[in-house]
Length: 216
Image (cartoon, rainbow, N blue to C red; front, side):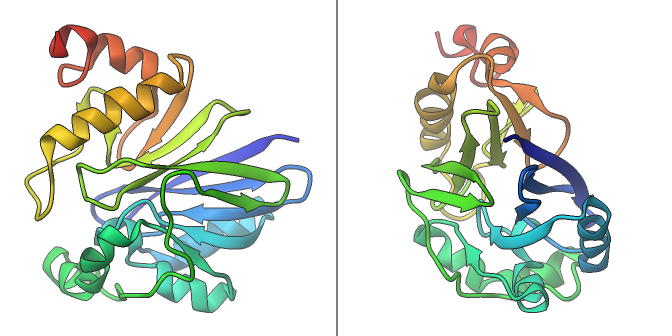
């Protein structure tokens, strides 16, 4: 059994929508389908995966704007984020208009998530970690066997998530990275919400915001 991954940048903000699936069953999930619905459907067709659920890291439009439409079109449930991001989800249509993401729709998740939960598809189970800071209800999905984490906008290669949005908190974000993510291990690769992949070890050593040297 192994986790297969295809990353598709979507929307004008080039947000990383991840298609993840179990190679034994071809059953999988979509993580953060922010928009470009037809492109996502084409990618699903190309992988041959059968989508079982949609997973959302946080309520910003570029990550969650396409969830409702895809949930309806694919007849699958939406899981996540943490309920603390409900106010962001309620603002998705307004966010979409502001950032030029036509068709963005608000939604009510079939399941709100919290730290300690798990999400499953096929024979794969991923842990859910609550990592507030960028938004108060941000969650991260971790597949420990594959040594892979889907971190949304918590951390990037060489950078961290913005905290100047409503309910952002810089101190909480640093704590989430240093105390929740880095202990997962230096060898763990992460897929961020934007840009290239990295490892927690590389960021702990070199990231100017959260490296060991940066935080003293």
